[in-house]
Amino acid sequence: VQLQASGGGAVQAGGSLRLSCAASGRTFSNYVIGWFRQAPGKEREFVAAVSGSGDDTRYADSVKDRFTISRDNAKNAVYLEMNSLSPEDTAVYYCAADRTKSYYGQLGDNRYYYDYWGQGTLVTVSS
View 1 (cartoon, rainbow, N blue to C red):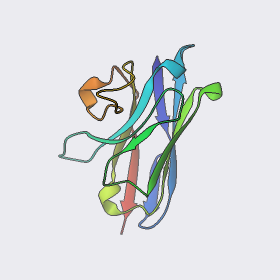
View 2: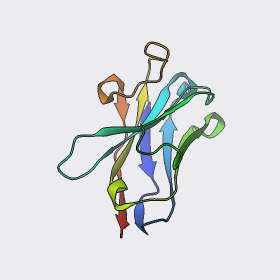
View 3: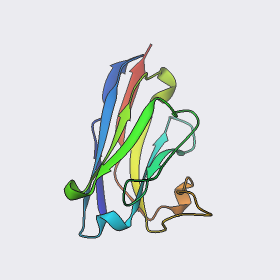
View 4: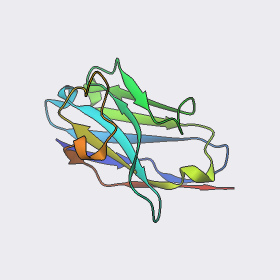
């Protein structure tokens, strides 16, 4: 599967952005899709993940209640709705696909679990 992230941009603190991840391939619904981010000088970190059916989601504590991940398998797309953005959310955001449905009953939050990656999209939040 090939992935392409888009929707990044510059926004002021408190604002919102919606990222999109477009995928190619007929088996898109077989993959867990995750969003990760990497700020300058920091490790790539987990943000959110959604199951193949869209019924299950998982979030990092830092974005819970502010970000919402969803998917539309008919469009081969995954979205990340980001609200109440803060400068700490500034990073390059990546979407990735994982062939493994779960790890001990949970969606993967480790970047090494994910098999396919899209290019990143930059989100800049100013104070």
